[in-house]
Image 1 (cartoon, rainbow, N blue to C red):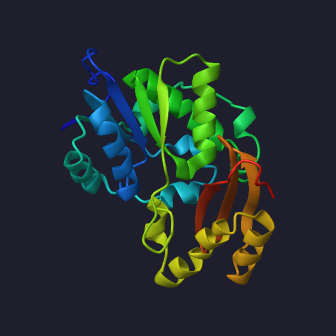
Image 2: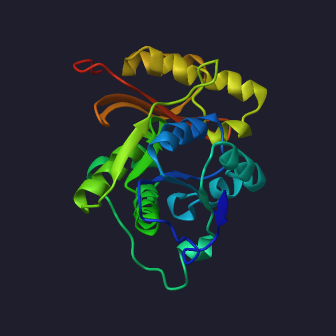
Image 3: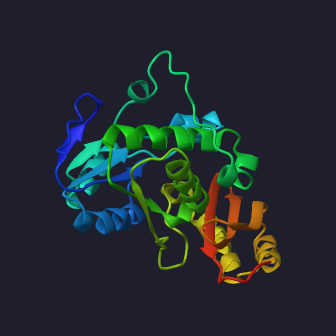
Length: 255
């Protein structure tokens, strides 16, 4: 596996299929599922690791975001990644950077109501990564369903020549969706967080709110939205850790 820190070093062969799995690092089994979905489809598989400051509206949240650069190298190599692109903030946002992608549509509501400018940061960094790597296919996880919808909209509206593929949410045995933020939960908080998958299992927004309330969780939102189909989406803080999760509803099943 080749580790690349600068855009100038990223000299990829252009024969065959180039694939991209963008990540913010602290790699876990959810990322493994993305890598394993991508690996057989690609002649050259690029994984990116970049904690994007532009999508954080809270400096403390950015500082607390889990990072494991050495572990990421081991994990990516074990999954057969050909190139790990791990740029610095200065490489992605050099002095004078002043051009942003500000999406509407799928970016409105849910996360945008609670994290101002979040999807401006997401859309901008995804466009940059897609332009830098120039993959034919890129893989994203369904856990971030609104992000997936925004990226698909970005590709469609800006006529990007890339196919976006989506991998289903990976969960621990107790049902909690895998997230790098889970590492920040205390044992008691993790137990409390299990109310989120229980709430989603109701497939009903009103019942989901009752399940969260019984666990003493005050959600940022519990809503049904069209995110590649009707989706029950939840965001809630467990202690200081903010978790998001969702479940795709059968068509016609709205609350």
